[in-house]
Image (cartoon, rainbow, N blue to C red):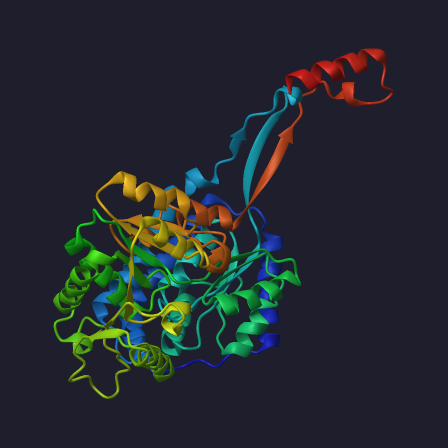
Length: 475
């Protein structure tokens, strides 16, 4: 798709927000049938636009394998929508809550209600999935939604806007486009909830902007997600799954393994197996048809700078082939960086590309200290065959999520919440967690006619004092 729609102005965004807000107030009770209908229309829009979206994503990246776009962006988005449709009636039920003894016979309920109008800021690395999945959760929860896609994938954003406009009125769901200025204006709107996916530095600015309106936020950020090899690990399996997790979307994945910790005696063997695994997955290196390009030349130059610094510092660098790459494609070959100095930028910054540092450790305590001394990562991967080696990593570290003996796939586990902790994010979504994120779980207490409430009213008589002493014993 060659058409790129014009960026939204602030007055236009404010008008769209006001329109959605008015519609939400006019229709505060959103029925099961309405929600299911919106999810069905979202599914229809995505299914019919899939070929155009796949083509647009490849154009935005300068090259992106169709199979990768279909799997990660189309199929996973459809999975989120269909899971929500199947589960919606159960999610919407009012939940009973047991009353404390001293308030019986009162009854407690949790009533899920729409928040109202929500804003969603999507990133460029999975420009369909990371837009559609939160939209599906917002619609399932009965909200109206405004979506701001990334300006780095303008063709995809235009295709998505066109597809959604075929199925939704602007007061239900709309797309606004533009660069950083438009994004900044978007985050200052007084949404009832705001979800942002992207970098930690920008996430801080989003949180600050939202705080001015007391808008609750869900921040899906990133960080340096480690893959830990324990002494009992199957190195062949670990190498292949780490190489796959790092090679997917050319490493431009928020949960890609950012570095590998390996027992020092196993480092040489693992490094050789990682190289072999990369070559098995991408026989022509970066020129392989299954290997994606880097989103922009600027991002590619940053990766080149990280690798150059590591190499000039004395770290061993193992590069995969990079011949025969078309000049118009912003591809960058996978590379393994062996035993880099901890002070290098490649060990300080989130890489977001196909560079994989391999760091040796001498004791499990040393490896644990290395991870826990740094910001809590969005994901942590542990490889091993002995539970006594794996268990300390599950209990002794903090991360958004953990996958044992694999990488990345916990994102697709949509019956588990997905989210970060600390600098890697706050809040969670996917599946029921997404429904609850975009719902106000209203607590309701129902007091029957016969109750003990009058015992709490003044004047405080001796009899009431006795009842209070008894109450103190039983609560």
